[in-house]
Length: 306
Length: 306
Image 1 (tube, helix red, strand yellow):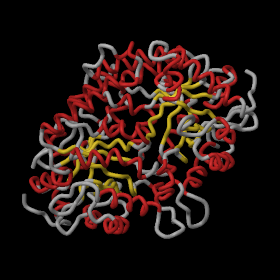
Image 2: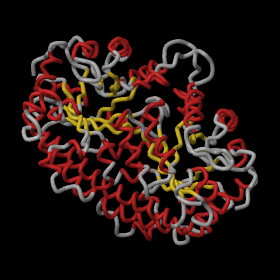
Image 3: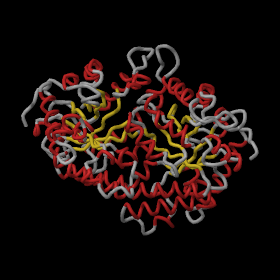
Image 4: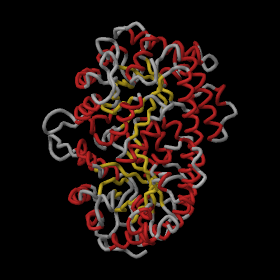
């Protein structure tokens, strides 16, 4: 599997190799990091960014056996300004060095040459493998991103139905000639995907972000976008469990990855894990949380061999 | 007028003082900058970012008499990675030092604590005065930004109707129980604005991005959001002229700023300006383009005294 393959081919090869559909969200919050990283690093954005980078690199080592893909959240890095963005770049590079695919969660979207600038900024050769994007501005604004999918082996995940309580406000508005606004966006996802390279299972490079909090909607959206890789969000405590993700996978067990961020990376701070692992053995906590999630997801999907 | 005033009060004081509703977009494209900045700076992102920063600072000196507000476009800075983001931060600081307000055009939007991170990242004390945001994810996702408007003297401009050809795809979809999707977003803008500080003219801190390419729509949206400051985009060559912006202003001549980016900053490269000014006198070209636009807009709005 080489970088010249399409995004879905690379993603699914990694899912098969690791027998996993887990995506680990990398959302660094300084006050939640294990103390080995934060100690003595509170004085500036530069030193906080150093903590982010060191933590992320160690985290990647721990999760690499369990997850084909990671999803750094740009917002938390941007909070530290330019040093934070430098830490994000290094985190993306470190993930790729470890053979992990990277979905950069930045939810970008703009018009004309500005969209083109975002595509070049965040789907550069050697950078992230995929990017989350917002389609509200129109189908034409996705063109530069789709071009990177077609010619650069990249992927995108278009926001279709998010997991927050207010997601209904605009996404679920009933349209005069049938369906909901999110169905219109899903239609664009399906149409644009047809312009991108598909893998052997007919999965293409334009995917969709959907929440695990609404399993019935997940099944509907899966049907409307039969070739789109899904990024399923809000797994765990406040969202859905493995069963709620079942409808996201194709019959081949592929076509979706399920994200968990704090539920894996900061599991050591809560409940049972706080007692059994705690700050000192955060690595053990992450390993257990990631492998438990992997196994749970593998009970609701066919699990193809590498 | 102090920083503790609401955004609209600060914006309108600046508009009155300069007798101008011009917003100058700062969209650095390396290959379009005057050669005095690019010469010898092609070898790395760091040196290109240095060109951006030096150019932006000189540009700010030239436009400060003509424009109350500038709008740096984050995408072009992000293209250069961390050094580009550092140049953006310095550009924002330089604008504020010169008494210019800053609308950061980054079109951010995310859910829960991630939205909060974006609000903290881009509407920090000492940072940009206002931010463009995307509401597709739902009204609840705007809350952290509105909080910064309420408590931090900041403003936001929600994307309502953009100026690109594909803007109709989702923004203009007819809703089953009346109106268009963009009207729903406009309704949220109006409702959220009521939670923020208003100036003496009853303009509040939650504004909207609308295109100048659709004057009839501009009048409609103005009526639906009677207290929202508008950021009118795509003025000039490929968009609307001053007449097309008329409906954006309130009876008091306030409530809107009109953006031009390349039409001012890179005017020296085109037509008449290329001959009369050219690369060597790009400052003269910017001055003339900015003052011409200011004067044109002042013919379609009441022009309150400072």
